[in-house]
Image (cartoon, rainbow, N blue to C red; front, side, top):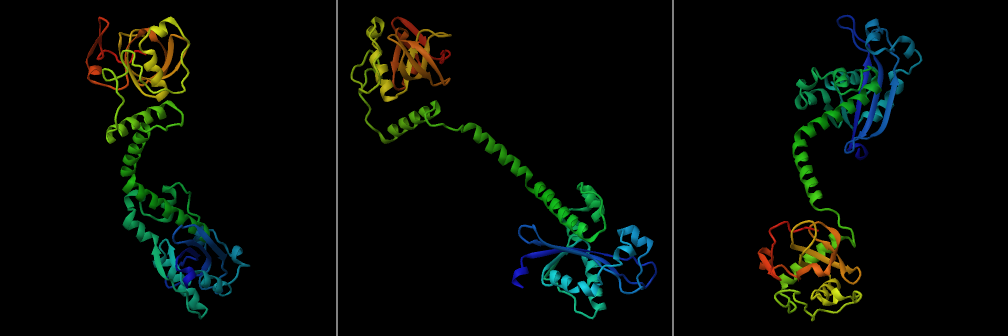
Length: 357
């Protein structure tokens, strides 16, 4: 039966309870749920009360106390013979699963079919969840591992001793046991992996197009590419844009308005070229909240004749600088950036707080 090879039928039966030696059982209710073997989702269900056909196994008070099924409830129910075809169809050729079915439920199925002179359905395979959980889940977690005990252990409520309800509880219990075992086996590794992923995510912040992080990333990539490929660098005085170099590339960046201090500064043209080529500049600056120091900046635009706006690479903050306070500017780091820089009879130590923006 190809259609049922991947399906499991969980089932349960309710019966009378013998009150004397040699007395047999009479089936009072049958319930089954067909689930997909891969996804364990419910595909079909069937349940029915069954009226006993003989008085050899009467419904006693003990039986009623156990499952709540009374003579009145089964008075108009079909006999087993009347529902045998449906039970056979849902059971035959599938994997049978249930709690303690090997010792109890399977035997009751065989007996009832034998009473009506028919061959019983045959399982493709058996999964008895009681010995399965004893072997894997262990009694130290949930005592005797009876369905009633497991139901309370997982907060599912009391076992009702009704066929279909107990069948569905069995499926739910099995899924929860599997979850516990899975977490115990893999939780430590999963938590460690999640911690590493979180740390990686925090270190790799999302880069928004047009943002400062993107500009900084592009600058770093460009510098690495130029160094790796050995591209020829532009000729610069003293290894950078120092002393008013005038040979930089011309772009479309708007020139600052004419002004005495702007025109007099030897760094106006180098800063203009850095803006046009979007190059990073290492600048020695007098002013700010601390002593003069070397700071990496990304010149952005002019703000009047004597001021320019740049992003401090260290802090990521846009600041306005006065051009007459620029002591030195270079487009690439060199040994002097890690040493004391002497200019205009002033000594600047870059090891002091570098970013004083």
